[in-house]
Image (cartoon, rainbow, N blue to C red; front, side, top):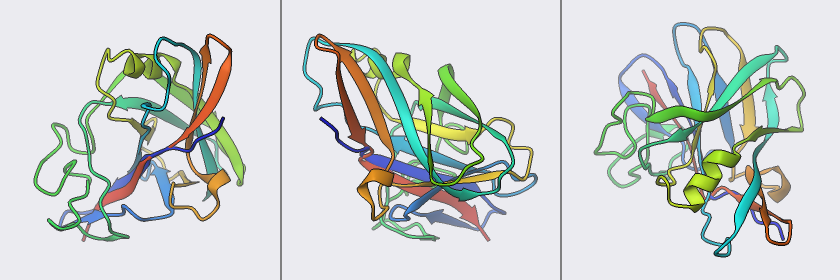
Length: 212
């Protein structure tokens, strides 16, 4: 059985004036641009379709690279610690009506505890390379996913970011708004009993940044 991810979002920083939301954008960008516009992606996956009483033996975050430069880049995935809204805009200033997340806050009216998104590096995953377009890349996030399933911690999704955010590398991934279902972000989970594998698609996505 295969399902698709529920939510994802990309956010980046630019000189501060307007807070931008990209909740309906068909791409997610992860960059390490020096001095301006580091971009981070947020993705959320609803695990409620999983049956009770299982043990997750493996979980991989799967993102399809659509574009970006061909320089090797190290991209990390961490667990988000504050819930966030997707929003309804495409590269437009956030409003109370759209109520989406931005570089400065998880909603229109609230702020992150740390600008750029709240997350913990514990049990994070890292991948280096990502140089080929139209390729699915994977990060092993088994411990985080089992923790969500067990309610060890709240499920607020993943943040995906450049390791150092100190280079001009950039990678562009398909978001859940992509017109081809097979291109959308998925969390592939294998569990026992039964050695069953399911793909859950993100249920929220957004690209957020602060723009002049």
